[in-house]
Length: 322
Image (cartoon, rainbow, N blue to C red):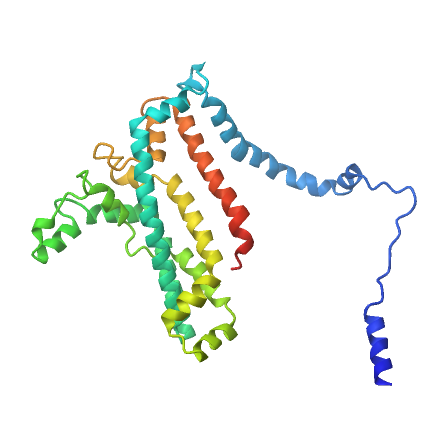
């Protein structure tokens, strides 16, 4: 009796849904569907126009202008001349080396420190304390970047800077420098901007990944006798590897494109000690009027960013669950 009842329940549960038949002669072509949804397409049209004008048109024109010796008024076609000049441009090559050093150091520092803070927050027992620290680490993001850079300019000032005053107070006056004014220290000083390198968004993404780890896995690790360091290395880190890869590639893209720090603090100096490709592109365009050559530099940066974005979309996003 029970079995027959359950069998009936199963049969009812898998009963096919009602099939809707289209009338004969109905047009199911692409054009008919577009006409049926014409108001939706009309609503999307302004956004599509803005997207084409402000997002697609500039890089297409930059690519076209990169094949010209263009000063904004006159344009002479020179083919790949600008790109060949890049290979011999000592300033550009030095800028590539500088951005490579800055990126390697800052990406590792920012992600390691943000991951460490996220792990500490994850292991807090008090929910109130966790929420408080989450807000505390996000507050610095409200401060405009330019204000933060001016603060670091004061810290590194050679005469009245906070860092030199601190060294003097410790009796380490022989370590004092004009930190941003000497070629031997300027690039290293830029690496330490943002110390202790805790980025709020990175921290929250790592924390979200840690909170997504099933509690059963963590409890099993505790029962097996794993201490917090063993659990981090063998369980936490492998299970948030998607977040780690995502933030590494996004940080790299950000570092390749960034030049506001150098623009505000050193203008690429002393000499070209802190020059980066983005700042070189800006100076070539607006200080020397070589807009075609600047477009070539911009297209190289665009190509690098595009490749990194493709890597992100293809190999990293499918594995991320935040």
